[in-house]
Amino acid sequence: MKKIVLLFYILFMLCMANSAYAEPLTLVYDGQQVEYTGAQYTLVVNNNVLNPPLPPIIFNDRALVPIREVFEALDAEVSYTSETQRIDVKSDNVSVSLNINSNTAYVNGKKMDIPDNIVPKLIGKVGEPAKTMVPLRFISESLGMNVEFDGNLGVISVSSSEVSASKTFSITDVEYKQSGNGTLITVAADSTFGEFSKFMLTDPQRLVIDVNGARLQTAQSTYDVNIGQVYKVRLGEHETSTRIVVDAQKIDNYSVSLSSDKKKLLILIRSDKTSASPTPAPTIAPSKTSEAKKIVVIDAGHGGKDAGALGVYNGITYYEKDINLAIAKKVEKLLKEKGISVIMTRSDDTFLELTERSDIANKNNAAMFVCIHSNSVEGSTEPNGTETYYCETNNNSNYGITSQQLAKNILTAMISHMGTKNRGVKTANHVVTRTSNMPATLIEVGFMSNPDELGKMIDNSFQQAVAEGIAEGIVNSLASIAVPNN
Image 1 (cartoon, rainbow, N blue to C red):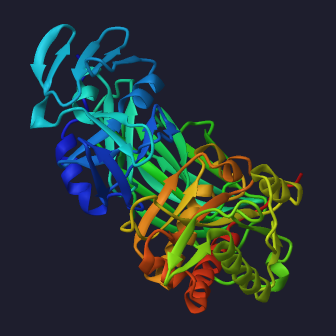
Image 2 (cartoon, rainbow, N blue to C red):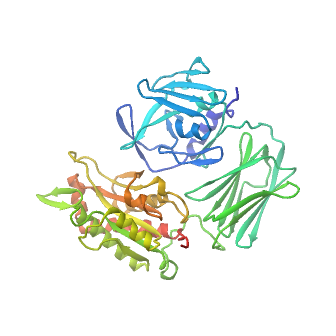
């Protein structure tokens, strides 16, 4: 049986200090609700980046992955029997059977114990269906797959092909120059290149190339390029390969090929617009001339006959539609002062259908859609805090950033201005974000069902702080957006 990449656990422990940061998740498992603040990882299977409903997480110091998404991507069959809570995974030559919360497994009919006492778990984000999360190491070994854990990049890579551990050639040099409207990076070796694979990561954009059988013998491991949209090239040697990471502000398209003698790897990063000194995370407020043509649509949730949630403070009833509109108008004012074009879906107490709101953004070819709401939990006064949502089916990077990054940028800025509890960036299938063509997010400012939080939300100075946070997140995101031509 094929073996997993050696020393997986050692690599994991060494990389934990640098593992990927993400907003906290509220998870439900074993009948309890838990705030998960640990690492979350990008999942790459056979060089394809997956976006599972629940990303790989760390549970009792071990990596768990969503079994169905991983192994169906590897052409293995996955089935789950709810009555017995049994999971079956089958490929051409291996079959594995597991049960939720059981540390006994059957591999090709042979009974064995799962190591480290890490058992399969049903885990889900609060309010969403649970996913079957399984120990990555055990299943990978059982199905004969290769696993690479890159803590610095925040990536778990799974591949079905066997890669020889022997290193047959060395990468010796990296050069770079401007080429037309792009940046050409040349990676040289002391003999012909072996096989290589590539995939893209977003937030921020990175092109990742894994060169099999290559050792690293360059003078340095990091190159500050700062040509066009490329600002850095990083190299790192792994167990069976060397990884090349190209950090770029924006990658419209790229190509990776070999020279005629196969001793040079040619990486061409193209962009519609180049800059002599790109920066990885622009946060400078846009000028009136550079950003005026980018339209931001602000949607004050509810309105008219749809009052939304309600809350009572000091005997007075307040409606969500009014709080949403008050904050939205403050955001509009702040953005217009920075020279940004703003369209409001409503500026008064008007009712709009959900699809009418996103239609306004789509018809105006907006750069982003931001929907403002206020939260509430019936029968409970305890929940509090701020969260943002995005729709996974509207999360591509065609505009330069994803909806997830937009939601994260706005939430980060809001928390710094408001000082409320950070409830994280979450996914949901809201109509307004799902039907938007551009990056879109829905904000839940706070809980009207919590009297203390409602008291803040009706205060003009607090609403101003909320608006400043939203506006700052929009400005920081807008600098990275390029609206595609119709």
